[in-house]
Image (cartoon, rainbow, N blue to C red):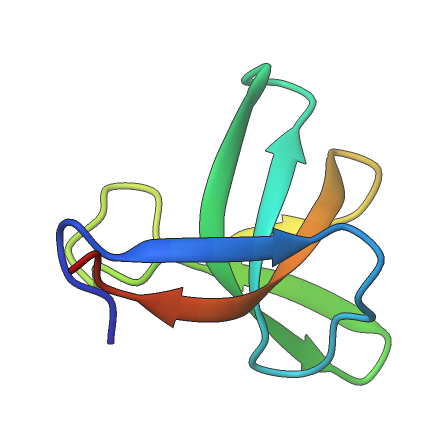
Amino acid sequence: RFAHGDLIFVDPDAEPHHESFVVARLESAQQAIFRQLVIEGPRRFLFPLNERWPDPVVEIDNNATLCGVVVFQGRPV
């Protein structure tokens, strides 16, 4: 759904929901990642947009902080 060069706007105050695109900070990696949030009951997972990514799924527990939700996607003119 996202192509190289797309711009995204991330709202740190937006409430994430199932299948939201989010930016999250992983405590172990000390970096931010862009993933899709999947909620299954009480469990939350981050799925990469690229299915061939080497770390396919990250379960959110105390290892990640959601930094914001993508609220806009577009291409520069």
